[in-house]
Length: 168
Image: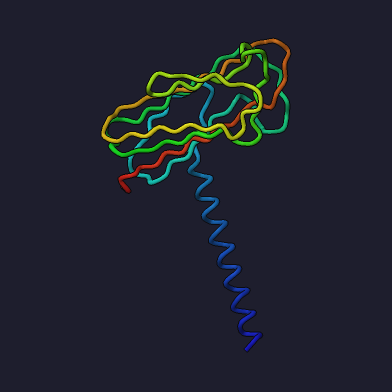
């Protein structure tokens, strides 16, 4: 009886691992990586949508020298998506070269309400959310500015996850 259970357990482990690998592969194929300047419109039909936006050449390891560059990501939740939630979070590691008052390299988040926040330095784990409940459309944005000041940092990777709360 023990031998049978062990074999059964091994088969179950193999099936589980295969299913896990298949799901991970399917998930990674569906990830969207956005370019420096992007307009992203959330869509219906997927319960969860996950996308990434990062500084150019971000690999999470290499410190890159600042260069004069500006990148903008605009996210829109159209009015047709009546119940929709978007969560944005800076992944680890995320580091923007820090200057006094974030006057050099920085990331600015402008909420749909029009308020904005400017950040720099160690920004891993910073997050923002937008919720649309029958009050769309809503647009919000991120603007990354880099100045050629000789500073180095790994940059950032922002994960954007959209949830269609209608379950469609």
